[in-house]
Length: 624
Image 1 (tube, rainbow, N blue to C red):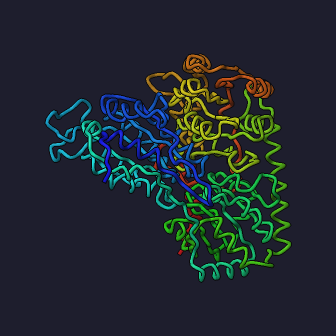
Image 2 (image 1 turned 180 degrees about the vertical axis):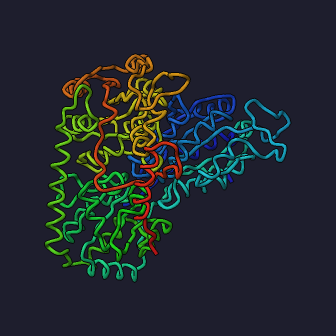
Image 3 (image 1 turned 90 degrees about the horizontal axis):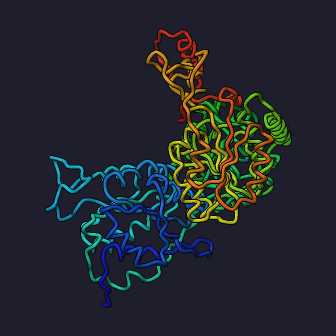
């Protein structure tokens, strides 16, 4: 058997660059390169291998968490058929990835993590940055990745790669099992050589299947749909990942069943389709939430039914409501005691279409749905047309970007009050225009995610909408975007702190305590009832300039519109900065989110909020 002597790290890179995915006859390399920050735990291992093999592109980044966010965003744009690798040194470099790794797994997005690890041979222990344990010598901080990885292994010998790497790729390319995969690499093992079989490095194509559900369950699902009076589709991210948007539109037009969208599923139907009800749940529209309340059949497609989608189990109030769940994962297909159709969204919808030939909802129900759609669009326009003074409102800023930005662009966001307002108000014109990381709602995802999106689709404009709180947590990869020539347009909204939690705190009776960027008074941070406060001297535009961005400072909506036009002709990342009214929000539209309020309190507003919480808590349901 022919062999080649390579280090462990060299073998990893040689293997990864020959892995491909294929679906529907379309083939592509699975890995587009490697993000990394080098330290003593990987510089002479994976770092040396990346230097030796320049055909596997290396990207220098500024923050380990951010590079995993960027890789996840890349994978999301590529419908999970491509991704990137992330390598770090040991200790803090490795554990900096944990937050973003959790986000990748929660969002079911493939990312391969290669953190450096302590010496396998142990004789020099404890090495710099090593966590010692008196109970075991076979433990390191990389063990923290175990609960958030879909596959985890520690490579203590070079030949272990022969079994570990194929298993890692099986998981990464699986529509059901995918998420973060971690291969912990002891720094001495990375540099050790082994005679690897040449066949191990041959091109390998991983077929991504379109699984079909059981035929008897499909027949039963068709019967349930035909018997329903008020069916509603809840479209999740699985619709987009399976490239089922055209099939869904055809299904909707044939059946007349209206569609509500989750955060990940927004864009499954274009916003102006008469049966698109928009967002459903705690951040939902009046149209979708009213239909959800009365629905006697909910058809979930590629959704995991988060508490936002179900409005903390209060969205579906029909006492006889039933669920049909189309999902590649049985785990999600069985939720809500549903009739499970475990299969690919597009393939399953195609088979249901054939079984439902001639079926259509009652004409009055369709008319009602279309009227609700039109009423909702009028409400969106009302909010877009607000001209709040002296500071602009968030709703009108969203309208400015949505109306005046490039209609083919991608908008990215993740955390704060923006996701809820965007879920309601953003008008999606194509399936990839609305990119929200809301499985984990991780502050700091926005700019890194924008970078990953731009890398995946360089010809599209990318609009990053980010509040000051998220920006301050993770903005350094503005520099990476400048270094690599990936232009982003960042709309930086200054709320003087954490607007989302400020509003939530006030709704819970806690008056926004600890949510503004202000100086303490009398050794205590003032809450939003304070008559006068002194805000912190933060110069966000100067910070963005220091990272290489072009900055345009704005005061009004009109300024933002002009800045968007100017930004089109700037060849590097541009930050459009504007202050926002932190107290003007968007209504809740007959929905609710369960955040428990203190059962006892000396504060009157908290006691009042507790009473309201108990009234809403009584509406939560179990589905048996």
